[in-house]
Each structure stands twice: as C-alpha cells, then as structure tokens.
Amino acid sequence: MPILQKVSAQRRNRAGDLLAVLLLLAILAGLGWLWWHEKHPPKTARARPVIPAKVAVQAVQPVAPAKPKPLVVAAQAPADFPRPVRDVFEAQVALMRRAISPGSLDAAIGSQTRAALAAFQRVQKLSGSGLLDTNTRAVLTLDAPLLTTYTVTSNDLERLQPIGKTWLEKSQQSALDYETIRELVAEHAHAHPLLIEKLNPGVNWTNVAVGTVLKVPESEYPEPADKAAFVVIHLAAKNLEAFDAATNLILHCPCSIAAKVEKRPVGELHVAVIAPNPNYTFDPEVFPESPEAQAIGHKLILPPGPNNPVGLAWIGLDKPGYGMHGTPGPEQVGRTESHGCFRLANWDATYLVKLVWIGMPVEVVP
Image (cartoon, rainbow, N blue to C red; front, top):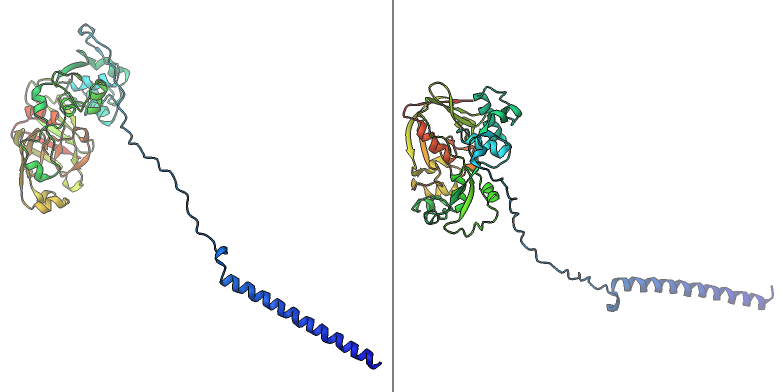
C-alpha cells in the first residue's frame, strides 16, 4: 500500500477512537448530572407540601327527644258500664281494680300483663294462656269509666325535691320524696310516667301550676276484706301472690329478685317486721361493689319517702337482711337485680302491708 494511503487510514482510525472516547465521556457526564440533580434538586423543583383544604364544619344541633304520641280515650258515661274490656289498656285497668297488677300501666302487652291475665284466667278457670282472647274479654269487665282526674295542689308542689346522687347526700335530706309532679301523679295512678304524658299531651311538665287538672287511669285497688293467710313468691316467674284462708287470690304483682342465685332463699319464711314508710339504714358491708360505700365506711340513716331505697313499706322476714319492700323505680320491678330482697312497686308494697301479719308464712318457690 502506498505510504500516503497508510497515513490517511491511520488518521481516520485515530479520529474514530477519539470520537468514541468523547461520546463515552458525554454519556458519563450526563449520568453524573442526573445523579446530582436527583440528590440535590433545585429549589424550584422541590415538591410543595400539600395543604388540605379547609372543611366547613356545621354545628350539630341537639335533637329534642320525641314526645310520646297522645293516647286518646273516648268519653264514657257511667251508664255504659259494666261492659267487657275492648283493648289492652282497658284490660290492664280492669285487672288493677281486682288487685291483679300488670306492672306500671302502659297500654302495651308485655310479659307482666300476660302474667296478670294468666292469673285472672286461673281464678276464672279459663285457659291460663295469658292472652286477651274472646273468652277472657267476656269475663274481664270494666265497672266504671277508664279515666278519672287528678288536680295538682300546692301541697304536691311543696313536697317536690331533687334526690341526692350519693348515699351521703341522701342521708342529709329531710325526706326522699318525689322529684317531679309527673312522677308523683304516675305513682298515684299506678302508671308509667310516659302513659301520663300520653294522656295529657298539652301539659308543660317543667312548669305545672297549682290547679292543673290531669287525666289519669282510675286504678285503685279494692279495700281488702281480711288479712291474707299466706304469700307465695315465684322466683322463676318473678311475681308475688297473696291468698286468703280459702286459697282465693287476693293480690298478684310482679317483684324483683336477687341478681345472684345463691342470694335467693327457697322454702318457708315468716313475716317478722311490718314498717310502713320506713327510714333506711345504709350499711356499706351490703354494697361491697360500691367504691363510695367503702369510702364512707360507716352506717348512714336515710329518711323516709317514696324514693327511699325500700320505698314506702318494709316487711321484714325471719331470714336476717331479707324482706319484701317498695322501690323508687316501679318501672324496673320484675327483674333479677336486688341484693336478695323482693322489690315491689310502692303501691303493691303498701297494699301488702294491709294484708300481712307477724308470723304469716311466706313460701318462696323456684
């Protein structure tokens, strides 16, 4: 090959090598630039923090509790009676007038109303189903109008007072009386407070004036003809029944029993003490589950009244610490919640006082 051609070829090879080196350097420089910017991004390229948009918060308005629907009872003349009952409310009142309590009158069919119907059916030698069936309606009659009136007096308003929240506060009160007119009137009528509201939809219960006339059920118990011969308490059914010497039923009512099975006495007991409108001795040892009771550490005497822990009557039994008594919460009667005693609505406890006598047998059956 001529020398000039060799020289020309060598120059071209060196130029290609140089171009390859420059290209490689350019690639390395580009990669280096990318690495640097990834580690040190310019300020303008940094991501801005996301600021959440402000959300408009609408104030939640408190919802007023729904008022109970009015219970309308058609006007009835004395000449319309006696007649068979037409509905559950009439049946409840008719039973109450026979001292067969369906619990607090509420115009609703429930377990206590069914138990009262079954007791009435046993007396009448019917099916004992506890249902307000055709045969029961034919025998269960109303002998007077369903409702009567109650006029609020100044004495009613004067006796109202708030009840202390603690045992100590209660012990320092002059009485443990009713807190509201609604409570007073409901207990007078053997009724649930909501039923009293339904019967009187136009009443402002926060400001009841003297002279206010209220509609209430006419549900007085009959005056007993004689003392009871014995009482039977049915633990499973949670009710109490009193019988005369001829084993006629003269009182049926729901009762609460001990929450703990081992606290429920079974067998024959006897009435040892009868105390209407009693005070109440608070003993911390009876309430080991109460931190307040353990902090007090000594007995307290609570004054009488319908909101006393034993209500308006105490009938002590010959088993120490046990008795039949009233309660501040008649709507709660019929539960397994006591420390061992048998709780009754105040109207049942005060009626039972008229029936019992010292030494009277009280049979507690499972």
